[in-house]
Amino acid sequence: MANVAIILSGCGVFDGAEIHESVLTLLYLEQAGAQYQCFAPNIDQHHVINHLTGEEQQQTRNVLEEAARIARGEILDLKELNVSDYDALILPGGFGAAKNLCDFALKGADSSLNTEVERVCKSFAEQGKPAAYLCIAPAMIAHIYPQGTKATIGNDNDTASAMNALGAEHVDCAVDDIVADEKAKVVSTPAYMLAGSVKEAASGIEKAVNKLLSWV
Image 1 (cartoon, rainbow, N blue to C red):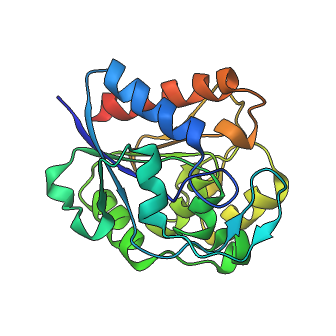
Image 2: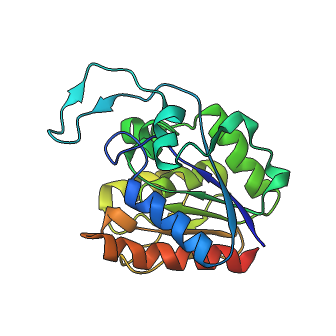
């Protein structure tokens, strides 16, 4: 039975982990018979967004505490993640992936990763353990894998250009499809970068989860 680590970036599409993508990931892992453990960095969010109005709020929220809402409290500090205990890694999207796990949303091709996120993701890559990055999370792939590793966020030209500038090879992809780099064992799918509904997001995420598990 595969044991999969999941890194969440908060709770809520505009400042944390995309909730639909996160829950769909858990669902498809369970349906495939895999085990999983959720993690998140114990840091403050970049900012807090009112998801009703879209306006920034003068609040401070903790990424780990917010992500615990999605994981129903079954979550650990990312510092506790021992890569040797897991067979694969998944990072759902949401702007938290590009604001809290890294700063791609702010700096694009000049972005960098959170220290713990970098440690974990690079360790999975260096040990040849497969990983899946959903939605905007594939923007981190160039920081982790060799130059030319294939990845997708869908078909947004500006985002794709920034990913290419970082060193990835962006591949345009439909919402219900995946891009898999067989050599690196990393798979990505656009999810809500393109999806207009939960059903549309689900199709690509299911394929990504199944591809990930096929490598385990």
